[in-house]
Length: 432
Image 1 (cartoon, rainbow, N blue to C red):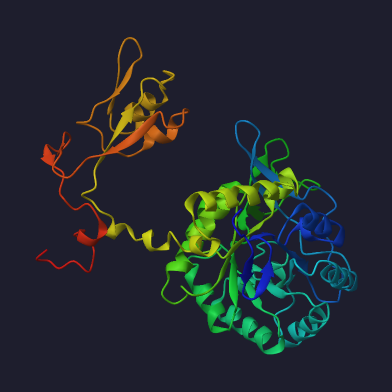
Image 2 (image 1 turned 180 degrees about the horizontal axis):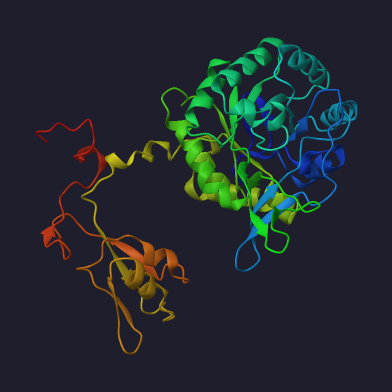
């Protein structure tokens, strides 16, 4: 099987699958169970300063969004950082690291925005012999109201300042966890790099209200008739996270900055997509809260088999897709496809017809016998029929060859078949 061992900013682990800072990494009991299941590393749930105790709610902490089959698509949590005593956490971290030297153990931190507060906790974490720290600049609820979490992560100058404090006061690698609750993810990543960050991790949770109780007229989860905004995570946030990871990976200012990908990773395929877009490893939370720690077994075997099938080493996967991420203005407008329906696979449900007829380009014909066919003269290849079809690969898109006549325009397809000869490619001269 493919070698999945990684060295992320010098932190070694037997595979790229880490647990994110969250309830699954709140104590030694959970972390040891995770290691035994096969996880390559963990980021210990966020520690705070040794001061007034953190008090979490004693009612519901999670709201949920489900698919039609009750499959969990997203969680909204209103939980704060760890409410366990700092000394207890530090003692457990030290013992776990001594017992599991081959696994990565990174400690998430969040303290008030003063250099003395950061210096104090960094010294204590170093004594545990943990492999690194992750600066939690992402939590959108609870701690943000106290000037921490996303309150720091939304201000690039604060990110740079705190990162620099940490780099000057610890020998450990510093990973900066970024909030998605910002207009341009490149700015905080650039700030982290200026401050000396060894890597960034993203995304933290998205500020959200998942639902409203229409009897109590309060956001869910509801405590004593009231609710609040929280942090949204899970499979539903994966597209947002993939885009933000790619934005950092293809940004000239941060293209060499290591990335730990977070946000909706549930399967090996999700992990491979994150890594292809620039992540050196991935962190998982909602999936293990839904299915348990043993899902890592499928992740390990699936990624190994994929790499073997591609005859590819793990480092070759990282950033493999980044050169193919571009801006809309550089897309090949002369690339033409048309939908094709496989009549043998069609179950005659009519979803494609309804979607196209009512909301798209009226490019699908339905016979009296409910046989659905594509009207190429109307098809703009929007892909909607493919997306709504319940049968995988029943509808596909056929690429028209250069010179073939597009029945919609009546013109032959232009011969710009690749990026190097593309008219929108800035390297192609006007004469060409």
